[in-house]
Image (cartoon, rainbow, N blue to C red; front, side):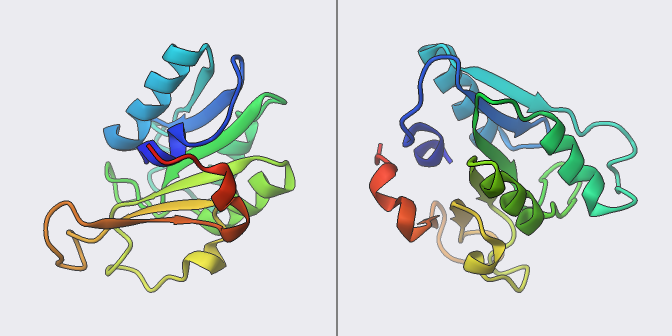
Length: 157
């Protein structure tokens, strides 16, 4: 998550959207980068009972879309929220973001090995997956996917 958050070239006043249901390993890199570089973190509040569970996945999509401004450059969010197990509408969020020229970073700590998934079909720009949970790999193992067209734009840490 830190590579995806810090690896993009951005400017002061640019915005990164995240949610209050992101794990600290996703939310804190956003806050740190924004504080260091004069950018603006935009937190989408998903604490309202209408999101637990939402009547329709579009409710989550609309909450994120409502936070977008012309300065939004990145949307960072969990595939499955660690707080309540809510499965976010990843494909729809990524399609909406791409239609507006915004990149997406998905925290995939839980889905690999738990959900039947195809990262390319999700349409995300970046996906950080943990392998030590449901894939039963060794601790601290994982992967970081970057859509091929973006690989030259993401700086490693």
